[in-house]
Image (cartoon, rainbow, N blue to C red):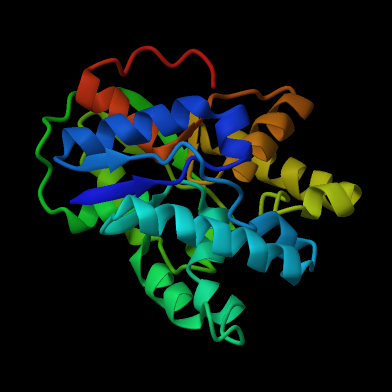
Length: 251
């Protein structure tokens, strides 16, 4: 598969290591990975703020960039971005010049966990990662995209990794796009609630699939003096493939 990797805005700035891990894991599973250097924002944050016109312009530019890269799949490791990009067909439905292109583009967008499952049985051997992990369902992955099984299937296939139950897993962590910026008190309370449930789970690390969740959960854990590494699904997979699973001392 020739996959085009979205590097993202917040992800690129705060979690470049997730993009690197994503590229390595895709390559290890046999993909040709293309990460267009001139890609810009996907428009998700503009959509969260209700600015659909800016979101449309961001969408047009991103479609142009990835169409030029000639990829079979547009691979996204930030759930909020993937959710927005899968709706480009609706976002640009009233633009005759872009409607068909937007729909075709949206049909190629996949979360990275979808792609890895779609590729079939693992090509790269998995080495043990001995830790207890709580998996947090990012709202934009579980609720908006309906993706719950694929991340868990990938994680449970890693030797030594134990997924511990996380109470209230369907409850938002408080990030929710820009919610924690426009409603900081409610966002902080949701974050505290999530951090308490994670602490009660006894997990060594938290695993999720969205840059906003990673920032929020890490901050909320520190706020209640229960800090834990917060990692992306692909970071755990990368560690298993490269046999570096004992190296997680922090984010």
